[in-house]
Image (cartoon, rainbow, N blue to C red; front, top):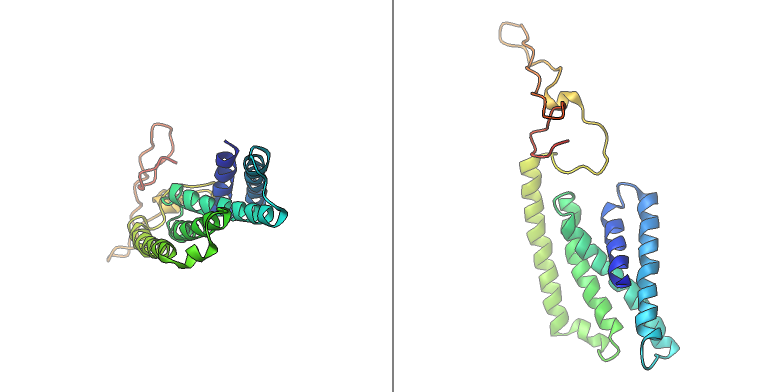
Length: 197
């Protein structure tokens, strides 16, 4: 269970970091500690034979790398609608990082596997995901042109909704005021992006 809690905290921190770097750095560090605690319990306390120190350090390092890979992959997927351009980078990077970390963590697998046919397949999948998600992200940006889910950004400018603004001058030189947007059930105007704000 600690693995999932740690990975969840890391995925949230990786995706939301640009919004509040100080806060999400703390969340990420907590996630790393939880994930490493899970690794220590699973690999050393509950294991029947404990690895030697060099192998133990490799497992801890690979587990840390795996936590970030899983965090990038899951966070990029969960918040692709909110941050499409960022998600288009995080998902393929998470695939590649997770694969490398998983191979390094496995005592029976050789690191040469990273550069073998399996590594090539993962690289092709990650590249395909990168290009495919970028196409989708570009399409989403063209469709919404600024709409979407907010994570605590600034207040919406009334001029963006057409409230209190005037239309451009008509050929005769007079300006006509725009009709205010109809209030929603809560009394506030809604944006035309499909989300109630």
